[in-house]
Length: 254
Length: 375
Image (cartoon, rainbow over all chains, first blue to last red; front, side):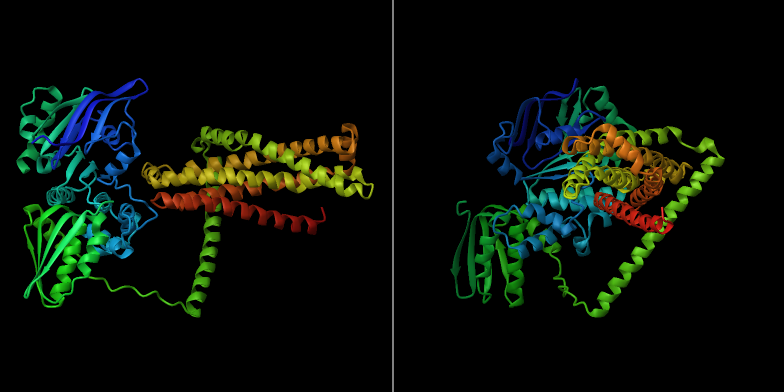
């Protein structure tokens, strides 16, 4: 079923003379978990920042949930911003706020929501990402890296968005923590009906959670498809990526 | 916004039937909760979800709260028409709802608590003084070491810091002391003219600038500029574990970071003070010429007659002490930075306040000291 919630057409990103993306097209379908992979410097994070509006492309069209974001219409932007959540690499929690207050920040956008309900919903989200009740009152500096990522996910999910952007969710976690995080993303995305845009390097994550994979290379989305389809792609980088020793190990484990 | 959430209620003898339609998300929560809270918990409730276009965790939470309320009253909540995803969501939310925490009562603080706080404050302040002396001692020890082992001394870093704290501060120091000279001449002229003693304005300017204001003003500017820069530079290295990395590589942070910085200040502050003196006198001289018609020749004669070289020396003799205070406060605050950005900001502003405070206190001590000496 073709129902893209994110449509990119002809995206061009350029820093000085260095072209990162050129004529890049990508569709993300509703309810899927799309893993975005690519070598270092292929602009995975730049692509994510382009979609969420932190980076303005030189050319191209970005459509999210049917709203054109390249036109700079603030009303369309506001609608879309209520419907997406972003988890940055290290959580990017506000260091002067407790975890609970961090999760409450997006909830403050909801008009008329009582403070008690806001607090209860924040606690609910904190519990749903697998943090204990005592974590809510802690400051980000008192948390471990894995807990900060979970708290960042709780903040990204605070408004029950339709789309969630995750930037390297498992980077820097131990294998057990990473596997738990994979299960968490998978479970939550199915239960909440999320569309997940996941930038990752982690092959285990790709095999464990992703419905589809998009490979960034040669300044564009080289190929998209399921993991099984990736194995048949005849491109040197894609071949090395999905047939390397680590890929075989991850495949065996999945 | 339009009426998005709707609830149709039908009360039977045994059960109450609720048909929900529209959206039940966090944006409709307030409305939905009001409707659900209004239901009396006097019979079993059956909720039909099949017409809901969208429900999120907030909606599930509202339903779970209704379920808790009904179960407390000995009744049941049944959900009808929930899709697989919805029932999965309800289960997850049910698992995640935390046991109500015992709300913490705000603790009343008695006199004893306040006294204890005061005592802790005093002890912390005393410890802060101890740490300051510790860093100062560390600086002296490493300075001595670099005298014995000149190869360990970082000349390049020293020169770079000299440029940063010295050369780059010249414009701002010059401008501000020039303006202070102007202000002193102008104010002095207005007051002294009443007594026909205009010519003493030269003494007023020269003594106050050479002895006190030149170096004090310079130190305050440098404290604001450089103490904060030291704290930010060392603090961000501390934050990114660069200091720890240095230690593992056998590099002594005090040797690599403190010595060049503090030494650069000790070398540069007297020079900046001298620049401030000259610019202050220049400003005063120009203003005297404009307001009081004191010619430059006359100004210079009066300057050499009325002012002792001792005034200049007393002023500049304070510079190394102020330099050490500023440098040690800045470096020490940098080492106190924790692992988050907030503590970096806090320590930076603390370094500036402490450095300016300590410089002014030291200046006051110097005044008393020199007065006792009679110079």
